[in-house]
Length: 455
Ligand SMILES: Cc1cc2nc3c(=O)[nH]c(=O)nc-3n(C[C@H](O)[C@H](O)[C@H](O)COP(=O)(O)OP(=O)(O)OC[C@H]3O[C@@H](n4cnc5c(N)ncnc54)[C@H](O)[C@@H]3O)c2cc1C
Image: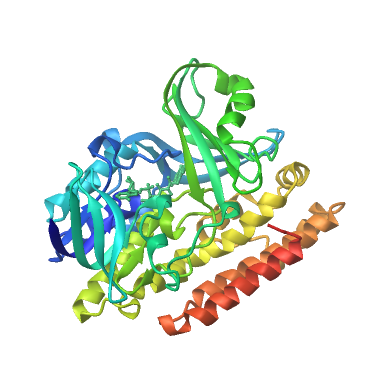
């Protein structure tokens, strides 16, 4: 069977379903396919935490009713000893992903998007050097050929299409294991009442979660999403084993009645892919690494990448140009805003991954960064403790006895702002891509050398 559309979206997780929603009702002939059925929609294991601002920025309706497991008012970030913590305020939710996903997809369908579930994309179809569609397998094992002017890969970290595109296309960019976290989580009904369920908890501790963190996200007073992520490619133990051997020894984790769900997956924790688009192709979400590199939150970033992709697609159809140039706005809209923040947080992420527990403890104890700055850093990607601020006497005094930490913080602040400026100057068209990528690679490799990072 052969089907023809203007736009084919492969994968209906946060990225693909948001795009389907944003393109619905525009007059474009759009189809979305996913290999899972309704009960597994948005089914990737997750901490389920998302900031409210992502819905406001993209126009995707906020979760309500049974879609919300817990209203969140902020985050508590704990030092390794747990004696010190930051209280970072900011509204958000712990969502029921399946309910939110089903609603977004149904809304898109009600406004004309065709959705085919239990349909797995096998490979892209390239004809005369051009991407023209996707070969898929339908619910009965039947082969379906989807033809479309624009094909969107929103398949998450399976990267089902992107990595099958010709090697010389710059979108074919693999994810290095060290630039990802391997994460595992359990949703548990606890035996005790959880205090302050509207504050999610993040524990930074290299002995428990090397190169990542472990979390405790309350879902009401009696249940919690508990998990951890560890940096990939470094030979660290499997996070499920760490969960059983270390977290399950803690009173607040061990005292549970029931496990509702236990599973793990991979999450990219780096700057965005160099380009989200090429001729007739757009990649959004985990497959294009649109994720916050520090906390690994990718749902809101996926929605924002979809938001920019929807604008680019509408423009491309107005002009009848589906080349990389015609779709380029998806890059500009993303890279110069959230992408710039992501790039700068990628610098910070690498620094955090090489910090010792001792330095982390020292930083939180002495409040090198203020709580407001922490929020600012997480929302904008600006390290407030950058050059200017670090020269302030108070910070210098706070880091007395730790001159090497002060020096490294200065380096980090400097490179964070350089990375951000580079992404704000993302090239105007595909012609400038190679030169820009060379500058980005040089910046990150110089930074890594300066900090002694060898991976
Ligand atoms: C343990 C863990 C905890 C996390 N916690 C958080 C958190 O608290 N907050 C947050 O914002 N993010 C969190 N993340 C990250 C977040 O889950 C992802 O960034 C987000 O789901 C990415 O959305 P996506 O649409 O790109 O990909 P996915 O959610 O992976 O969706 C991809 C979709 O594509 C479909 N698909 C894949 N291959 C094919 C194919 N060949 N054919 C058809 N369909 C296909 C899949 O079935 C799926 O529906 C966490 C990740 C992990 C692993």
